[in-house]
Image 1: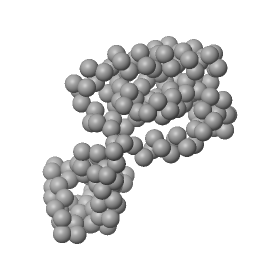
Image 2: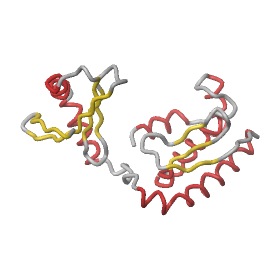
Image 3: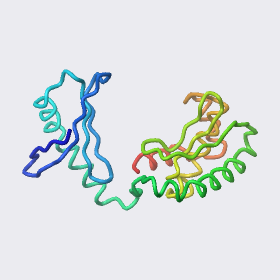
Length: 183
């Protein structure tokens, strides 16, 4: 349900969603300046508003960050996904082949998806999944994501052994990881 609230003299329109499985209140601000809140069923509208008021400074800082940050990627639209899906598949396949020369892993399938919150994932059955939006990233960040998912074929966790694998081809992975989190 769409609601509005006045925070520090500014009108904020946000989407409130009640979730049966949720145990806590969650707030997100997207690059398109949309504000969304998910709350447990027992939370009243007044409690949700109070939570939002308490987080007003954070909301405004996120909105300002998106406004000033040129590295924010375009929204993931279905049209863009269909247009760039195969280009993303080509890029990912070439980079996987290049980096796998170091590792020698085998995967079952490469999928390109229209995900909004994940850059990539690796399934326990050996399938590698990537967001088509990887094509918008600078090459060094694209490389990091591909190596990260490739290394999950060797270590299906984020243990020290996993990060040792990543370091073999991306020694500055910590810096790249911080960079990708800002996008």
